Amino acid sequence: MSLFSKFIAKVRGTNDFSAADWHELEEELLLSDLGPTLTKTVLEQARKIKSENANEALSHILTSTLSSKDRSMLLGETTTVIMVVGVNGTGKTTSVAKLAANIKKSGKSVVMAAGDTFRAAAVEQLQTWGSQIGVEVVAGKTNGDPASVAFDATKRAKELNSDFLIIDTAGRLHNKNDLMAELEKVKRVVEKVFPINETLLVIDATTGQNGLQQAKIFTEAVQTTGIILTKLDGSARGGVALAIENEVDIPIKWIGTGESVNDFAPFEPTNYIQGLLS
Image 1: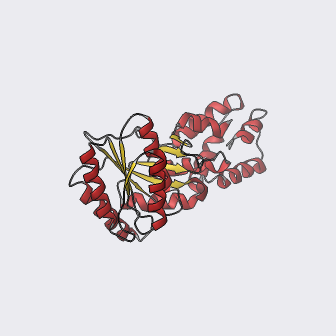
Image 2 (image 1 turned 135 degrees about the vertical axis):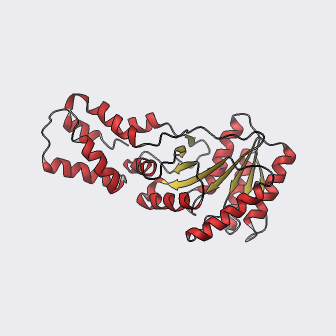
Image 3 (image 1 turned 90 degrees about the vertical axis):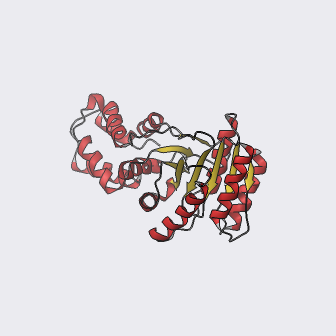
């Protein structure tokens, strides 16, 4: 990503930054999707940095903008239920499958629920993934009730005594009230059997500030416990992770970096920050 590499290279040689230098850094930060609020904060603190410890000081500044909340998976007493939410096009359904594959690789059993019933391609996509990774998928009729699919999947997970149930949800971005009502219905029927332990929001890193707005809408509508950030492929625009955590204080728990099922891993803040600096 190397978002701050140019800044560090300059500041190491001098403490005398011109107005043009600061303007250039501000433009870099905005282009990297930090957003105006966080950019202003970072610049104010960066002005205090001395050349001899630029890397260490910037690392501290950037780390302080990240959420301090726990990034570990929230587990249930019996079956751990994870509801995955987000708008269409973010990689939500693929992320459900990648998360399931990651969990299965650790030796745990998983059931997936194809709850994005309004998009036939999403159901078919999850079923294809299920066949590839060897995970059962519970699906219903196209345009059927997502809550009904979620309930059937919950019953199936209980029958199998599955360690995990991961529920894909409809990705249409309604107004906040409709969104809340739809997701609350899914939650209500599932919790007749098991509590929902995690609600993970999928955000596409390449959408920048639009992704930040999605995060705000969803976190107002549902109690989000973590974020899956997709398409974090090493471009400088990965700065959106800082903006999201700083603005909504929800921890990024997983990142997707490519198309392969293996291009999915827990988010490591230290590695991320070093990537921005190196």
